[in-house]
Length: 387
Image (tube, rainbow, N blue to C red; front, side, top):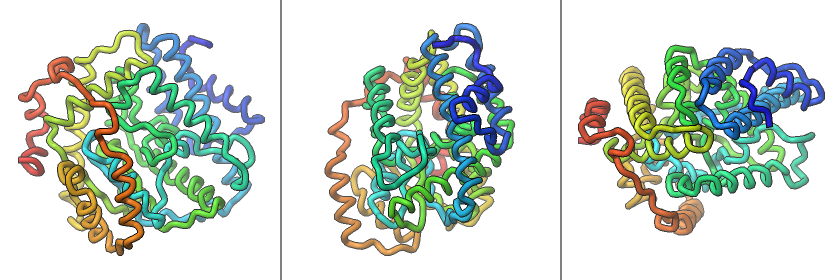
């Protein structure tokens, strides 16, 4: 496994060599993003040899996906005609119930869910056939199991499952403009992201959704709207609305005093997968500031839009009366709530109770956080939605 510095030009050539010399990667905005990202990853002493190898392989895989996706669009022009209409987008700080809401809503066959294996492998390994078992599923399951084996604590923080709905932020990774700073301590990349136009990344996200939707329809799935979610959108809400102007936003809320230490723990555990000497204090302080800025900017966007574009959900209600929360969401969306869908959701909730997963234990102080520091970072948000 090579531990040489990551270089986007070299990795693009490697990806082309592994795809019968396909040439078209699509919109080239990803190159500047990848260059900035790799400059961070290549900092001496940051990544372990295994971490460098992991990101080399993962980057080549994402570049291969781009090549294959563009090849499909070129050969099958009708893919570009797929309509992505009025997506339902769940946003909120991590640890506020976004995953649970997405997976519950995904029980409704009128919605397209973004399955974890689809997000990780949006492009087929060979010519797509809906009539044979898809090898991407087996590979995604193996990858998820390997991640859990490498760091079992992750399962207590996030219910990893390759076969269930998960974040389209994983799709955004194909633009190299996503939450890579949750994988390593790369503040230079974080700063670059804040100061760069993310609209091209969201345009490519829409393109990937078209391709995945086309594949779903080839399998006989017929829905009308996507149910998406990723907290990352809080950092780029303006770009989200620029590309998906008809999106309906469900924003989840929970006191940052409870969420931010948990987020810090999750980030630190992710850093441990590939970094040489991850610092829990840096993880905590960086991500408190990142999410505080994202929340502030989202509040500013909300103030500029009609209130009907957003629907608020509080975490405690999701836990204690989930079906009532869902009924309110359906009223917000202007949709009926069939009894069969309610029964399916009830079954899902019963089968996936939180107590069936290990407890997530952490110390606030271990991550360089205090109640005062969190209150200071989130003063405006807490005054508006929590206090």
